[in-house]
Image 1 (cartoon, rainbow, N blue to C red):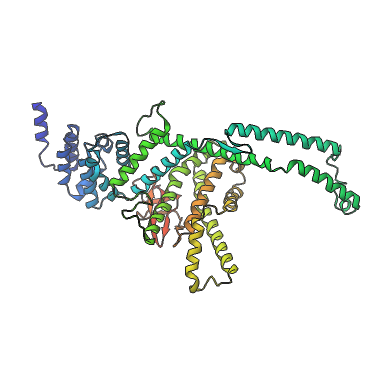
Image 2 (image 1 turned 60 degrees about the horizontal axis):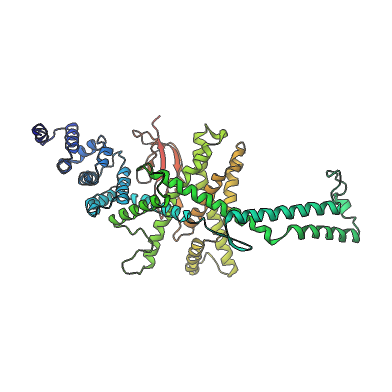
Amino acid sequence: MRDSGDRFRRERATPTSPRLVLRRVMVLAEGRQFREAAAVLQKLGPNTIAAVAGELPLDLLVEGLPHSAQLLETFFNKLIASDQRPNINAEQVVWQLVKLLASHDDPTLKTKISKLSKALLAYQPDFQTKISSRKKALEQAIQGLGCHGLTTDASGLTDLYHALKTELQLHVDVYKSALHRLDELNLISTDNKKPVDASHQRLLSLKLKEVQQRLIDNKTLLTILDKPALKQLEVLVGTLSDRVQNDKEALFCVSQLKRLQSVGDDVPVATVLMSFTRGCSALLDLMQIPHSPCHSDTGYHSETENEQDLGKDVVSRYESLYRQCRPKALEALNSMPDLMHATQLKSKILFSVVVLAFRTCKTLRDHKLLQTFRTLHLDHRSSKNSSLHKEVMRCLASSEEFPLHEAEHQVLSLVCDTLKEYRCLEGCLELRRYVGEATKIAWVMVCQVPPYELDTDFQTPVRLQPEKHQRHHSSDRNSDIIRAFLWPALILESSCVHKAIVITDGT
């Protein structure tokens, strides 16, 4: 014990170099003298703190939370004050706090980490978006777990599998009846490739009785096949598809959470998801961020406040498209043998989908606006009608039922037509979902007032601009030359609200 005390007293000497500072902080931290280690960092100047930051083993300090909260708070506040942003993984601190808030019942925990939470937000403001996106994904996964109940069929509420069996049996019976009827009518010739009977000249020479008989035969078949009950199968298959996707989302969320802490196989999935949802909510509360669009102390929102909340949600969805949807689509492309070694091509495909979705949705928006004004016999270019223009935009953005199937098809077709040699893309279900989600998000963004835009300056090589570019983790940290874009920046009235994800490389 005396040796340990002497060791700490020797470490109290004023450090003379970043190496000595780092050694002193680590010795104090290893001895769980976090308060004294924080005092050491508090005395450092801007240059010294920047030199120490890159070498400080942040993961070890994260393991010491919540006891190391004061040390980490001092560390981030010093970096903020020195206007330094070294290459450190501050995000691991955020998720460790979420983990603690999700699993601990310590009533003093929030008090211990409150100042650290605010320091993290000040150091990297986009942590708000990341936490909100994760919280929303967890909430959606929880909701999806509960969407596996009874479904409706002709007899009322029933089990989905029973409804599918009934519907499939009905299809089998109808198709058998149609096949039998085709044989009875003797409409199929032995040589079904004989073109004479279907020639234009033959069809124009039919007599009245022949046309009448053709009508009777076709109507007989249509009566058998065109039954309203047969259309239920598409609905049931859609429900089955949704349930598959819901379970995939839930398991994907659990796999992400397993990186933070071990999850027992006997623990209910919903319990795991709900605990981390509470953790995200608690951290957002500590950061003093209204994480719910309905949050208000007075129960009243001005129009400006509502638009600000909506804007945050829109940017959050754009972030989620990159953080959650893109990895799933990339995983699906990685599983295709034809694209196994085409690393850059796969990234370019997912990047192009976002750009094409924005362009397609802007064209569709302008067309719908022009249609509306023409219907009302108004000049869409007149400043007198600017308020109507804005209201129509808001209505288009808020309409959850607006049909975007044609836009989604157009985006996918543009990608597949450009890469005709990769036929596998046309049958990639995950790529189709990614296109659908990108189109929906793009539509909401281009219909905002004012509308969001993509920064379309994708020229490379170009020098990295910190205000609108963020390095991908695979980048060369010693280079500021952008060699590739993985994700476009999002712009609102000339301000960058979501940075582009880029790869820097000095070669």
